[in-house]
Length: 235
Ligand code: URA
Image (cartoon, rainbow, N blue to C red; front, side):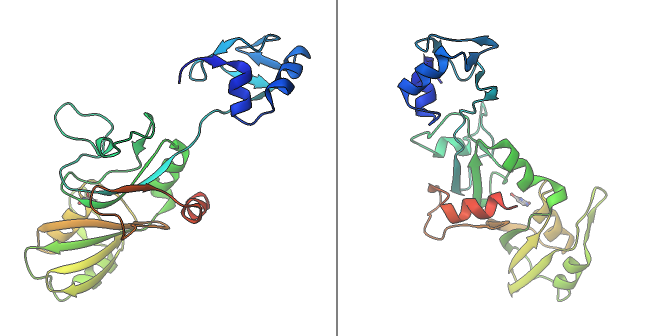
């Protein structure tokens, strides 16, 4: 963020009106980087300077929460020298500090949350919170008859992964919904492999209380609505 006048910054943040802020400064109630500031025309850079009013630090971060229907061909990262990143899809680049809360493989589609709220992202992804993630899965071989019960028991995938119990809902021999509570590297693909099938198409439909908006085409995004935000914050 660029530098701007202290009174403008604080009024834009809703602390008080500009004239009230001037009066507060005269009384010594405002400090910047530890020094009391009486002249509110001082230019401050909210990314660099810490501003306190009555001893309380002013938070200038506006959080942003964007639901993206990720298309295949984009990586879940903020920067990459070679591959296109999901942030390139947010064309009007709502702000420059967004990051994906969690990862989908380059060939996976579906729900991805882009935010700049590190604490929320941590809660959503932390293994402690066991947030459910539901995927729509297509595979290249018929699923075995006992697939759902093996997934429900917690399936051994490989030396490094025995998946926690999950829920498999069969649509037909080669299509299913899978709900898991973890997010290990290539987890769905490894679980399907343990069932003897390779994933040919994967799409995340939901993550905790957030469900992919069916109105969003691949590559489209929108801000979360109030109800979604409320549910997320209750996590
Ligand atoms: N599991 C996978 O294998 N890939 C993903 O992108 C997400 C979950």
